Length: 326
Image (cartoon, rainbow, N blue to C red):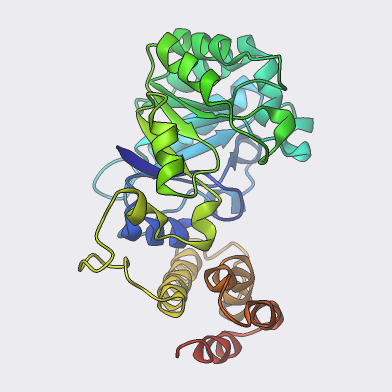
């Protein structure tokens, strides 16, 4: 069964996606890309759509609630190339993000209560791309209001090719029990392939999700601390020669840092008119976002996190990492 990396705002940038691909992710998703921002010419939003050499197939996730903006964004994403073909393998509409600022705009999980608008948004995407279009959503707004089958029907009518379903309700945010029975019911009802999402931390969690009949499993927040989760879930030998399966936290952080630096150089070269943080600031920000997580659970992790948060330059970061190498 395929194991894919979920779209995570502020996390699933190109360096992290590349790292997860080396650990065994079969496919990854961009951070949420604002259709409104693209439509109105916000150039930094395009940085979210950049990919790096060495990545596994990447899908682009869009969010918005305006058909014209979504249609424009679908065309823009479709026209992006890596030089030897389309940049993305799939376009995805987010109808599941429960963050208040996203829902206030009418997007994300706000769409759960409006299957007709979901249909129109997906249709706008389908009509403006030759790439497969999918929907990422939740079971419903809250327990007792399960509307995911209606959303699946809307997706199918619009010509979407698949669903990604977080097996929780909007009111649960990212916590609380999964409703795998509701997910299994959807899988048995819809003709679309369904990817299951929600709190996959162990092989047992993945097996329980797989038992619902989903076609693939999506891993999100668990990968932030442990990208090797993809290798474990796929049953790969941790002592094999595959690139990253036996790396220590230090080795993982150093590899990720190399990709961060490479990506920053790529952005600066490709977007010379945009404001790109200088290397020290860029690296320090990403270190505070990503790298400290690889040391969770090791002795002195709390003190180490404080040191990561205090980093201001690449040299300071290398000094911190050097103390973890043993």
